[in-house]
Length: 454
Ligand code: ATP
Ligand code: MG
Image (cartoon, rainbow, N blue to C red; front, side):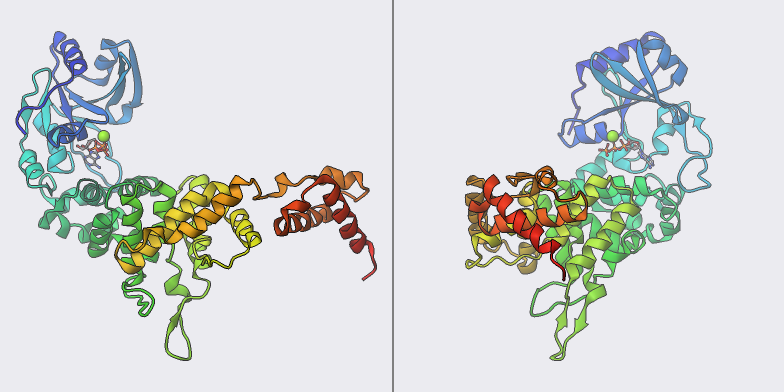
């Protein structure tokens, strides 16, 4: 972890700054990632040039965050976020600095940053390291630590505790004691952070290789109760005889499994929230055993509320909710082909991969061991067989449409929909019936039945 290589483009850009007597440094996540031996995803630069000067130095400059002294420079196909040295200013709302104050040195700029590993600068073009808070030492010790006094830093910006824990999940680092201990005192500040900013951290946590690292620390420090009280309430909800773990540990294991198998975001979210309705629906039956009837419906509804609260896009919410609502299927070898077809229709072809992934995560998290990875195989092969014959049906696959029914003399309206649904049921029971002639015949009969006096 000695000197790190500086990209040639950064050297070119540095020459442009230096040519007018200005300094420029590579800062933030890119420097951290270089020290971890990772390719940086994007470049943040810090400079003593004011935003107007930066704008005058390059042809293509976009004022992306001009309120914070940041502009985006487009240079030879690369994108560089350039921020003028800033100093820490007051945050009376716990979210945004009241006004921006420029600083004159890189050291002062680094002192306003959140974590020591994020407060290292490399002078360009040479790459000399400026590391006043011993960030490199913390990176080597795989430790997350605030710059300066953690209580103060967290009270200035309530998002920082979430960032600290998110990095724990992304990097597999530990959080230094004083930093962790400062989180409870900053909860009222975190409570004021906008839902969108919290969602972005939640998303990065869930997108990390081990979401449970951050989520357990969130629980310990009170953040989970603040942000996801529904999930915090799953602690201690016992399901003995059924599961080895309480509902919270089970949910975290499921989410970790989804992350480890690189499942998409909606599956990870569904894994985390698939059982959150359990504390609400649980009841003791006569023999003294806890039951959780219909928990998937309640969990789905609660997950929708969470999604809306954090302003997730509707498409993400719908997908997650549908997966949760359908996660409780129990395949048996004696399912008829019609039953398998109904399953495909109910879940939807485009959700099958995700529902398998969710179910696998759920099974893993019940036992806490890998279990039988092939336990879904018999169902998957039945489904694949049916899909290969192209016999899974939905309304749009029927041999006739609503227009045909209207042409038969059925008045447009509710009855058309009802008849189409019944036609689909017939076709699911016996795909051979899905010809134009047979469908019209069945439709005639159905319509006749509707026209009879009750
Ligand atoms: P990544 O982009 O991988 O999520 P990053 O460290 O680059 O990680 P950014 O949000 O891009 O994070 O921020 C760039 C840098 O700005 C950080 O490395 C840190 O120095 C500083 N920073 C970002 N957010 C804050 C904050 N809330 N408080 C203080 N400093 C921050
Ligand atoms: Mg970044």
